[in-house]
Image (cartoon, rainbow, N blue to C red; front, top):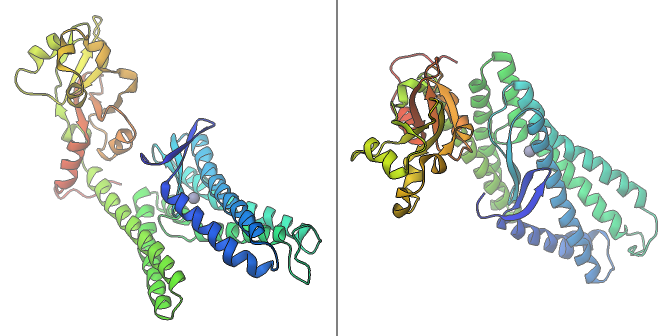
Length: 387
Ligand SMILES: [Zn+2]
């Protein structure tokens, strides 16, 4: 996310906090300090409740962080790059750079999140049992529980709730990923798993929103609004998932060669931009230019987007090799690969175009988001889905 508050990097993974998370943190502190805690551990100074509220909300966010971090670390172990994790209004999410390669990897990456909350829940519950009933400075006496025990009990409860809720077998929840991985494992088709998890998401979200609507009528409006909001969010994400599976199915019926802009100009990488593009771009701006070393190797790719970003006066002095993306940062595909495979490679790639090569290594063309978009909207000829 671009507008989040960066909290730094932990083991190379960027951690951010969305503004909506701050809002919800304030809300939790308020509810805990003025309602939840005074009801369970009564007779204390209000400053004690506020202090416990802040500690409780902070520990809750730490639990969300552990959940997302476990996804991120497991993803990395399974060979899936992680851009970062962000905590926001409805919890958090880990931004992965690609899809897991196998159903087993998908299962492991998904299951560690809710599992970590269940473990945390057990730890908080054990701690709660340790201090419950033992008198301390925060004990109100007269049969009420100590504030420390109440805070630990609440943390145990929300962690178990988070774990169980996330295990519901519906996209976009972790349980939806598990469900999807199971169908993928059984049918051998990733898209089938994703589609069924998305259907389940639409059904579950609609059920939640409907329940919210009913409870709003019966004067439990606070809970009702939450259920409607979360239900609506689940439905909208699940519908987006369905659209995406549709797009991927369409793209899997075509090859990279079908959609590429063929034959990008290949020019010596020592030339200045002006000299390089002068002959190559006679009036028409190609989507990409390949930079070539004297020994014939392709050393980089210059895109039209890059060119529009530089000061026109420096074109006469900057060599092509300096401005072009070096080849090791360019995603590459073969002409006969399914177009759907390029979606992953374009995601998170700064170049914005995939270089398409013939099987013998010759440059055949390039594909960007615009070409994928056009291909996805082109209805495939009556070719059955190959996967
Ligand atoms: Zn999760």
